[in-house]
Amino acid sequence: MTVTIDRTASSRRAPSLSARLCLTPAPGGLDGTWWPRSRALTRELPALTAALGDLWGRITGVTVNPDHWPVIPRWVSVAGRTVHVGWSTEEQDPHRMTLFSTGGRRDVLAIPPETGVDAAARLMAGDGIDAPGREEAADRIDARSGEEAWETDGGAGPPSFLPRSIGSTGRSPAGQGM
Image (cartoon, rainbow, N blue to C red):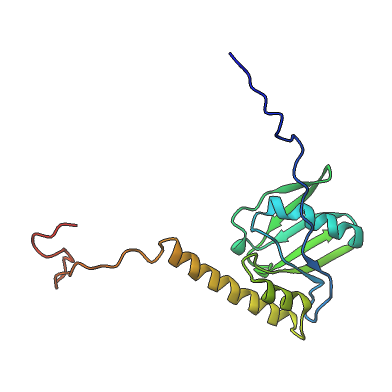
């Protein structure tokens, strides 16, 4: 058996990107806004918790609403320690994340990753938008993204070009099988 070693490949991980974060409190209980690059919490939470840990104390837990996160891990590893991840559909707004730290509880608006740069910058800056207004804008972005995915991923289905017979059977006209 022959073993080949590729010496051009690095065993080190690529450096993680910094969190896109604005910590300007907003009316309505938001402590800031966060614009993740994807909906993968295992990839996104380490950078977020590392950035916030210096300011708010060590982040020990995060709670999200599962509506916009396809996979919710039970925990993520951050700098050799564990951050617990929980979820709630009843108590957690779909676009908010609640972070628990040694300094207390904080709420951050999570801007959908599909958001364009200009819209995300406006949401992060606030531009006089209160927390409910920001959440409504994030809802509209998510709705638009869902419609685009539906159309581009084949969700609309093929057009029905075969006429249906009139009657209770709903079968195709004679001679035209399905």
